[in-house]
Image 1: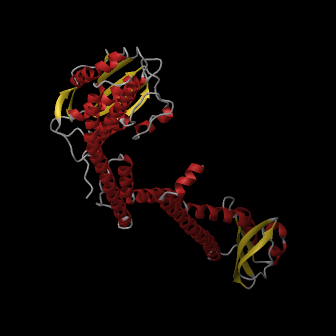
Image 2: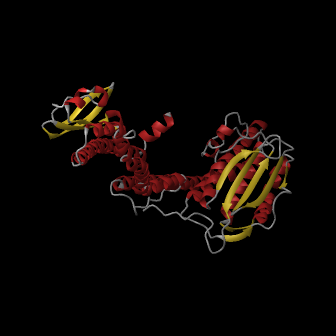
Length: 464
């Protein structure tokens, strides 16, 4: 209930639908009440007219004797409509209570009266035929009210049928009117953090057009700021790479010179620090290149197993150092090809495999596999290492993030580069529980099955 209330409170569509529904219900109740009261009044008038018509018929009937009048008194009672007729034409009949139903005196004024008789309430019409003769036609009030109520209730049937229809139509109209807003919201939710293209202004209602334009200006400013930041990182990494390379060469030359054991140890530490710094700069340059979505490489058709072989050849020395069993899984489907940026996918897979080698223990195992699922190609890298806690599996994709307690050195950019590469070619990457080992991690890359005549990534407009 609280969730529904919050949804109504924070939803324009919900508020409009609720307001229109309440307005329709209130108007229907007022209209129905007025219609019911009018129908009830007309039903009573119709019943009064019926009494007048019956009175006219009785008045125009031939004269009858007293004995015939007594017989008429017994026979003219209508048991269904509870209508009774009294003939007040002679003193004998008028004074004989056993022969009359209403027991009215002959002198009763003509017209309608509400009277009590035998504990029941009646609506009677007194019509005078002559100064000494009168006719009384009456109907039980409860019966009149019941008949009038039924007639009036029938007038509410159209309201009860049309009210739900009006409510449904109002809700559908509100939803249809706000469909451009809903479509715009869905497009914003489906975007990743790298897609800062302006929102389309076509079919946007005039009321929210300034808001959408404001969002586009904000996206443009964010894109400009991020572009400046990416260029700064790339330029800084590029400028720092040259002196780091020179320092590395100088350290190599210095290591060939005679020196004390203490100096040699310090030089080894310096060389290790330079190596890590150089690796960090290379990672920064790689990430900067992959985040530049407008600088795309040429798509090409290639076999996924071909990339597997290239990666295995590259990382095999690292795997042998820790005696890690690395290879293509037996469950992998052969002859699966892709048409996309080969080098971008290579960089992503290489970083995944290098991360797996870095964090699993000696004598571990890493399996690479690929298979096709519906219209997607799924590439998996699975290891039997310590894995990553489920609560941190999204956090580790952030740049420079490193989990606490990790002894292995690193830049914290590997998985960030992986996500940037995969998003660049229109895919997704996720970290999951291992499926074939007792512990470990399964990195899954999902890419669309694109052909040569179509791009293998989602086209994104540049922010202008």
